[in-house]
Image (cartoon, rainbow, N blue to C red; front, top):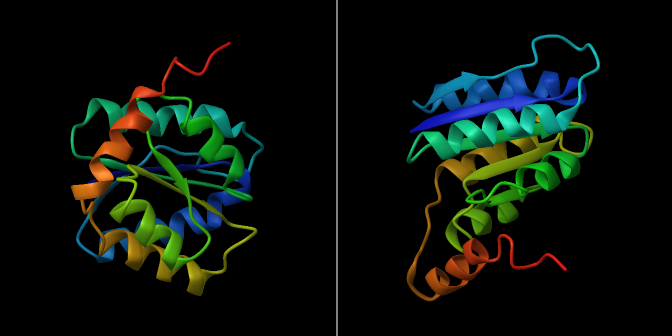
Length: 149
């Protein structure tokens, strides 16, 4: 599996840790930045990851900022992206199994290293169940553009 990862300045330390965790589990990870703690804008890095996920069929994305909230909001602006903010292993497992999330978002200021590892394990060891969830995911996919007033 190929993953694209990015963060903002508030998620840089966990980004390096998460990249190592995914690689240790045999996944290919492409780091799209940033590479220092200089202030950056998270929407720019969410866009980089989402564009790569959409351009590379079967790939997934990992986004990290201080809380994970900004990254998830920015990522979900992309048609075809189902980004899930996960603060624990249960939410990561459900995001994959029930919602077919293709981007996981985490917060460095919210989740410590031990919880991040549990989230990564749950994410990597889960897959979309399909079945009764397929129709719901299809409805999510069809919402883009229909919610504008």
